[in-house]
Length: 484
Image 1 (cartoon, rainbow, N blue to C red):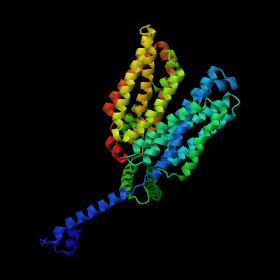
Image 2 (cartoon, rainbow, N blue to C red):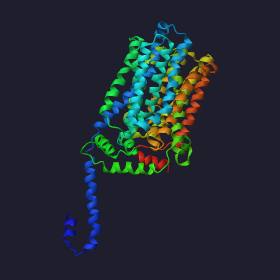
Image 3 (spheres, helix red, strand yellow):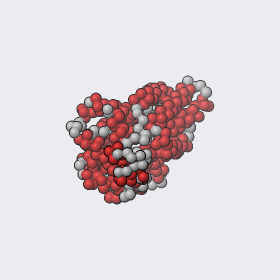
């Protein structure tokens, strides 16, 4: 402040002329302004970010409820409605087709009516689906309800991580986005457990609970500031950003960065599917779609859907194995939320994929020994070790991190269509692996897991060579670096 006073008085100690002091004055004032901004930014409140994230991940929990519904209800539904095995198989698998349709339309819906609007649409489909299942008297209503809940799943799988990524500060974005996967695991586990004591119709009504919380919570949740800025709603954009960061926070710098980035993107033509293959977008599309390919084709749905059969085939208790599987899945995914913003995305992906390779080889060895009647006493131990290591490794990185990275890497002008493509790829992979698993194991049980190990090994190479680290960077910085 002494320098500033001397400059203002025009008479410094060394008799320096006013003209020579002006740069000093500008620098000093800029330093004071930056210091004031840093002080104001320290007043940021994350309470509204946490509240908004909680509301959004109710959609993730609903996702898990939809996915976990069919396992504990198969016998009861088949008996009550006199369904054949083929009819129940259609009921179970049609969920995936609904999710594919949801994935295709999720991006355009989220771009047209906003992230909150897309979540409302998704919740409405889930509500309609659960009610159709509850009142079902035959296979038609049952399949319609399952298809509707599948559609809701497909939309939720895209819009929830995108919404969280767009509202969260960069230092919390990874952990908060990872809650998406944690809540999915939680929904599956809860429905699996309570499905053992509730009737299948009562369990369907239970699926309405997370939808109700979501729909009510959205009235208290601000829209994504980035989407509002993209739509040219400047006043609402600033209000939403101020609400998320706290009334005492200085949002000037963040708001300017978002606006500048969106203004640059708005000068580009509106993206269509073929535009994704333009050179400036190609790398981000390869990263997003590639991660989804390796996440699914590494065998997760084969292992997840047929865990009980794997344990039984290896001579281990299916009940004990499945419970251990569920516990490890939830615990490791929960721990993942605490380290993703510290360890980074890329290291977690590499560790996770390496664990998947090892676990698939261990499981493959167990079935090789069984098929050749060698060391039969060690087969159950190896199989259980391999499967539990598999789900632990998957939950540590490949389960959640691809969704986090997908929500970060796409520029906002292609986020809708690119996100839909990545999500559709994910659901197609989920269907392909679950459909082909039984055919593969009938060909060779150990060969199936060796194949999965090879795919996961290719995933390690892909992650190491292609996937960037996005920890601690704003969305605009990430996208500018990738698509430069």
